[in-house]
Image (cartoon, rainbow, N blue to C red):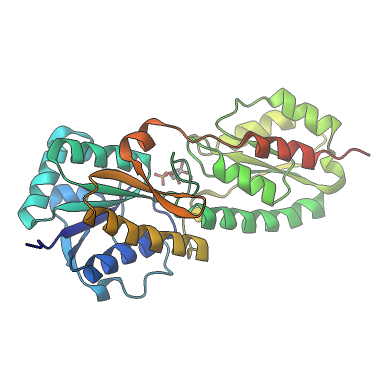
Length: 329
Ligand code: F6P
């Protein structure tokens, strides 16, 4: 007998452009394949409180182009407890939801893995975070759009930096990872980049500014990843300013604007492919995996692995910034 699967979908952690496109794909693909679809509101909190609604195809109409997440999102404290996860599992059983798609970052996947382990609920993770800091995938949903948003802002800052010959320190997001910062720095022709993976060496930065680059001639940009300490760039800029009192230094913190906005084509297509692949994986009886993008193909990675292993920055790209920003005669 072919039992109809009931597939729940939720978004968790920081929102990312393209999450709506992923929700749409999960819902439509579930229904296309003869399953029932359920939207769970406010991340794991909605699982615990039972804030769950049956979704039909039209519930996800006209959302593919929208930023944010129609399901809302949260970082649930209660779900980190065993009691919270038990409540969540009970709610799922009450409605008969037998499998789950979780769209979020590695913190969300850690919760998903526990739910699957403790209560036998099959879970598929879709990597959705602007940080791109998830092992097993070349790209996460929202990263490409966020980088483009940062680039657009810095291009504007460069106009004013060069008009005044000022050195700007621009802070971008990235709690534990410098992927946004590094890519943005290369794409905007920044003079330097500071990422959480590399200890900040103000002396080295100073030497570089003093010897290899003269912001007094044409202005300049240093991209700084927030590194879990939003606003840390003010301190860094102040330290550099103390050593270079003749430079006009300014700071711009881009903040949450990087999380919003309409997803670009890359994120919409990635989200659509992953949403469909998540449903296929559940129909194929996968129990605890994440989807990733590797060499343009959607691949499956055990949740265990993506949680334990860390994705590292490409050292060649870090070196590239120095090579391309050095202005020797
Ligand atoms: O994880 C995505 C992210 O945007 C990080 O880059 C950032 O450090 C964090 O979320 C900000 O979180 P919140 O929106 O809770 O301030």
